[in-house]
Image 1 (cartoon, rainbow, N blue to C red):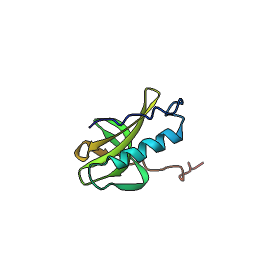
Image 2: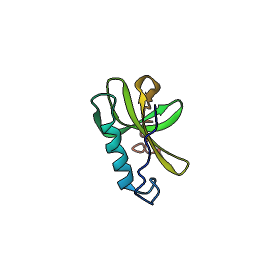
Image 3: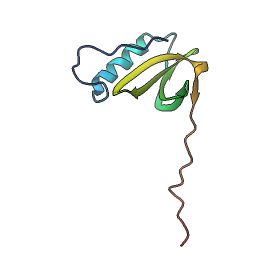
Image 4: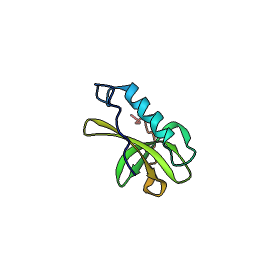
Length: 98
């Protein structure tokens, strides 16, 4: 799928500018291939072995975001290319016996 372009009105980097990220997400949801369902919390996924976060999905596609090369990226990907990453178990509650 085609990556969504960054807004040209902001001189800041999209890595640090939450307004640009929000504007890009809103535009992506308007261009959704179907009726999007927004996730309440971004889910960690991999797309072609690249780590990303899933923000929303439709019947056929998933909206993913990732930071790379000092920039923010966002695009719709075919759902069969997106694989959810299971979080590692949290062992912080375990204490070593002395």
